[in-house]
Image 1 (tube, helix red, strand yellow):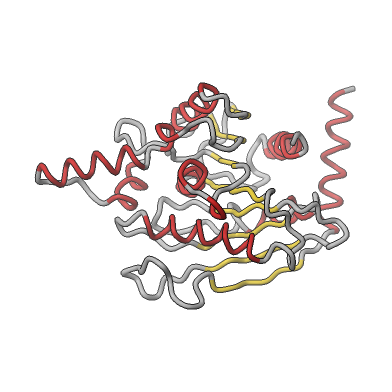
Image 2 (cartoon, rainbow, N blue to C red):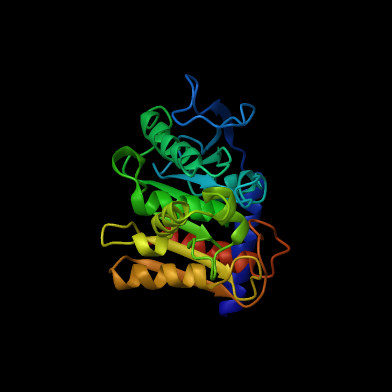
Length: 282
């Protein structure tokens, strides 16, 4: 009986998703120039905004940070392809093309914070509730999203977070080394540089930044992820639990890394069913 009900729900989701179209617009995140300049003058931050029909809008919005190891962005399966899923539930999706850090973490962090502020600045026009804006991230984008969720204040702070196979820690023992090096720089040589690197590694190990004001979370990953150890998401969940922050952890037996919205992921429909249920729970 459960299998039949589950299959029917999934079929309805697919049919309604296929029939639904979004209102889409793309905008420059920093029309007057970025707060933190990048050494790559050609790397521009942008927002692509997908709005549900006004009559379906619930007021909820999600800012999406695709992954890519802080060297590039998987904009499709970890970004744009999610629009129909969210819009069909009356949720606006704002896909962030953030700039690469080149060893300066403030570059992508400032982009993500500005994205959150921009959504709230346009809340009335976009039919969004300023108090119901979440952030979502994949892999290194999950690190960026959890950074915003654990450190940002005021208009930049999210009301909830959704993390897929996230990089969480900067501890070289179980971080994703490429993300670490691209975000913070390569290994320091002098004692002063080593001390500064240890400070940055602590500051950007987001499991160590959780407190009781950290916002609720949905975390999904695969047990056989060889790129970003599952310990990243697991340790983050444990810290959320320790600090009484509501969190939902989903570990799938297989799938590896980087599945995003791909239907080839064996647990794709289970995952979106569980995410939909979590979104409806608050």
